[in-house]
Length: 55
Image (cartoon, rainbow, N blue to C red):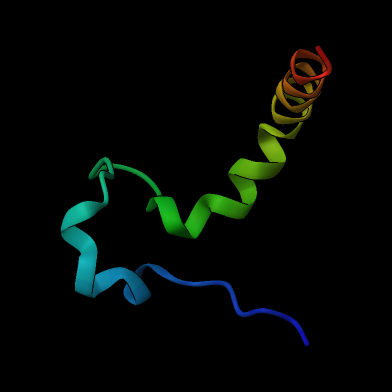
């Protein structure tokens, strides 16, 4: 079963805790795109963390 992506409206009740520029996309709505954009950096960082824990 596919998980429904949250929209900005889903965060309305706690919207005061989200920092978002007024001229652009809302953070929750672009999370999936941001993960894809930064995937190479996140993978590299993950590998560095794994090596540092290896001792």
